[in-house]
Each structure stands twice: as structure tokens, then as C-alpha cells.
Length: 285
Image (cartoon, rainbow, N blue to C red; front, side, top):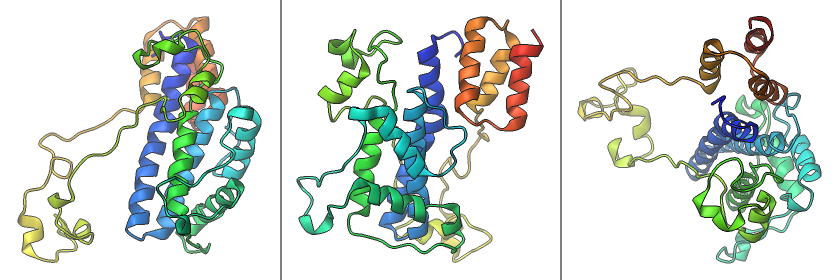
């Protein structure tokens, strides 16, 4: 990962630390909205919007280390940094009935997400309210913010190959955003599976293979999928851990130091981890 050029390094870490988790938050936001878990919908929405805003900002020269869950502040920075390419409004989808859409400024939605998605809402300390257009507006907002998780002035084809954008080679990614309004720069990995595995009702998620809250013997007698009962226990290393491993195995030269310094400047990794990384790139080589 450290042998790539600087922009490629930025893109990989922005995806791993921010965009990929945002994709999961967005999926869970839709899931919880559909099944009526309203406070969780707002929390997951906040997380999805926060992470995509942060990814776009750090890839365009704005550190977000000092900004936590405040998406209103992040959105103001987004408007400033992205200028004419910012997401500054939403429009009713052509196939959506007009009664399910209210023409409020986008700032209104950002404010609601910021207020009702805060951690206090999960403890019942903050009230929530729903509107008919919450989900289609979240869909459109996330879609557009995700398209902008790239450096606007990065040159297509220069930092890595992209067969789908050959016609834009030599042009900045801002041209892709402008000329291909439905193009996602990054592929999204959508979770797969069938609800039939657990049963036919949402409450089956709670009871299936649950020996602590046993409802009926049938819940624990049916075959469990590999995700619940794997033959071999799985594990996954974080990209931060992999970075530690690679830094420990190599000589730290200036290009490597530049990449790691960018990471520490733009993304909060935890004080202890930051001190360890700084020790590797400054004090032990």
C-alpha cells in the first residue's frame, strides 16, 4: 500500500476508513427505516452522511480531525471546498409521487440528520420526527456525496487505470462528475443474503439460533449459515494494523513519510496509535 503514488494512497485509505463503513451505515439506515427502528435510522443516516462528507473533504485538502459527528459543520465545509461541484440541493425523482416530497432547502435535511442522529438520540434523550420524504432524500443525498469521494483536480488515468473512464483520461475528475451525473466513481459492495435463512418475519432475527432467548426448538434446530456458525473462525485485520506491519518491515523514506503524515493530519486514528506511527516514521529509522 505504501508503494503506490500519494493520490492512490489517499484514495485507498479514504475508502477503507470512511467510504466502505459509510456504505454499511447507509444499508443499515434503509433497513431500519423500512422496519420502523426510527432512532437507529437517524443514527445510521448521520454516520453515512458524516463519513462520505469527510472522505470528500480529506481528498480535497481539508482535514477533518477536529470535527466529530457535526454534519452541519462538515456540510458547510463541503459547500466551501467543492464550490460549483457541491451538493447544494435535491430534486424530486420523476417517478416519486409529489405527495411524498417536500421542497425544503437541503440545509433543512442536514439539520434534521445532525439533530436526530446524535448519540444522545440513541439513549432516548433527543426526540425524533419522521417525514414522508426522509428515505428518498437520504438516498439521493448519499448517492451524490458518495460520487464526490475523489479529488476534484486529480487527473483521470494518471494515478491508476480505469477502463470505464478512458474517454476522460487527461481530464480532472470534476469533469466526470459534471458530464456523467449518474456515475459512481467507486463501486459499492451491497450485502447479500436471503431472509428465508432465518424465517419469514423480522422477529425471527431475534430468535434464530438464540439459546439465551429460546422461543421454540425449531429456532435452534435449523441449519445455521456460515456467518453464524463458521467451520473456521474468521478474522479481519484493519488497514491501520496492516500499515503498522508494513512500516515495521521497510525503510522509511521521504515518499513513505509523506503518505503517512497525510494520514495522521487528516484522519483521527487514536492518540496511542498516532504516537506509535510517529515513532516508526521519525524515531526508529
